[in-house]
Image 1 (tube, rainbow, N blue to C red):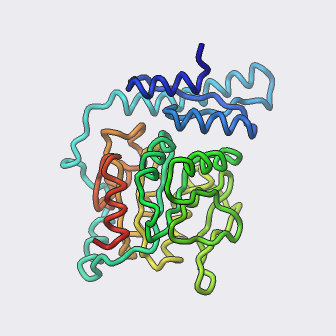
Image 2 (image 1 turned 30 degrees about the horizontal axis):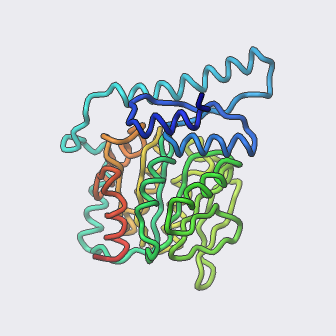
Amino acid sequence: GLDGVHGLRRMRLRGARSKAIMVSSYTEEGGKVTTDALMEGAVDFVLKPSAGTPDENRDALRAALLEKLAALSETMLQSPTSIDIVEPKSSVHRVKRRYRETVPHGEIDAVVIGASTGGPIVLRKVLSELSGDLPVPVIVVQHMPEQFTAPLARRLNEVSQLDVVETAEARRIRAGGVYVAMGGKHSKIVRRDKHVITHLTMDAPENSCRPAVDYTLRTAADAFDGRVLTVILTGMGKDGTKGCEVIAERGGRIIAQHPDDCTVFGMPKSVIEAGLADSILKINRISKEIERIARNR
């Protein structure tokens, strides 16, 4: 007698190991219901095709589901990962180490969180555990289309002591606020005189994403002079790695989510293998580390 969202909630409360993918309509109401499903434990969603013939829509839906299922299966079936034996695949870590030998860590002025598949429920936990007097702003880039990020921001605002809003043109970035990148556009972080604002652009997608974590990280590094703590959470692909290279070279800090509680160990794995992660943490430790670094303790 339960609808899908309440069924997911029951599964979550019982600690079920099953994984659920939401099939969503591309409407305002579809965005709200999909966000509710993601916050209750659905690991990802696909948009229901409606532009072609019934046969074309069926084939498009099948292809989208297969891509999501393949990524989930790879993570669920892989053997436990030992972080100690992850080998960096590039020389970036050597550049980073040289830089940081001469430039010690100092205070940070902003936190940027990047996430994709499985991100909303992790964001719910991380943001709900941050104190309301966090002395820096938090910028969130979650891979989602437009009409989906506004409901996400509203749901996250319900569980967070911080003020959570969607980014908007010329919106001022302030300490104590959380800014969720608007879907379908890049969120560029820009310094104007003494203030930092968001500028929304339709620049080309990066890593097939708009908003892209790399894009926001690059601009945040400039706006905050490298004084950025980056947190890369669960997700498919490598979005965030190139941005983390910029943050590392500018002396910022980087946290990657531990594989044990990633829905898809793609984005964090890429950052770890590049030698860019200062720490690799499970979900229950990420908020505490953000607080510790933000308060320069």
